[in-house]
Length: 224
Image (tube, rainbow, N blue to C red):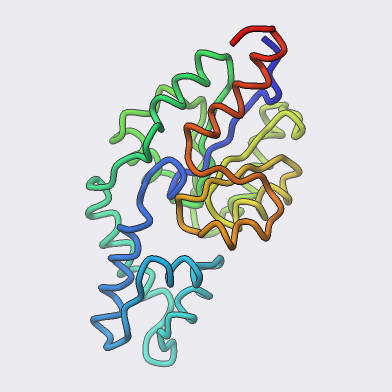
């Protein structure tokens, strides 16, 4: 079977892990404790951005009263204290298994701290599907794109043979910087209307991503 891509590089938060509503609930806690108006999921989707400081500014946090670092620390502490309550997106395990059976290599690329990424993936019992988990080692480490570029070069992978699957406009920017293709799912942190502006292929969920990846390969073999 000839595969269109050799490696599928998965984003974690919002793509495989269904944590968008959970993240919104924590941000709303932070807003409420500061007397700021809470926002619904749709509003958060319109405002969510990278770097995250832009998102907090749009929500109304006052950085003359407290630093971005303090607010970010509050979010991170609460998020990682309860993230185990989050489940995987529908079809995640089945998608990873089908792609493994078809011969795709798979890895995770995330802006999450390395040790926390490893803990989350292990907690969901998904570690065996990935040959590498690429998180951020420290505040001085390169960003998501830099981390991905370093690993692709070390692994000897051709960018044309790598696909990044994510859920935000930032994932499209990362893929552009890395020189790789990108597909986006619309059930994560950014709504379809914003993702459409990237010009990247959009999919409603992981099962449709799986079908799109396997379809061309199966058609080349003349089987279904």
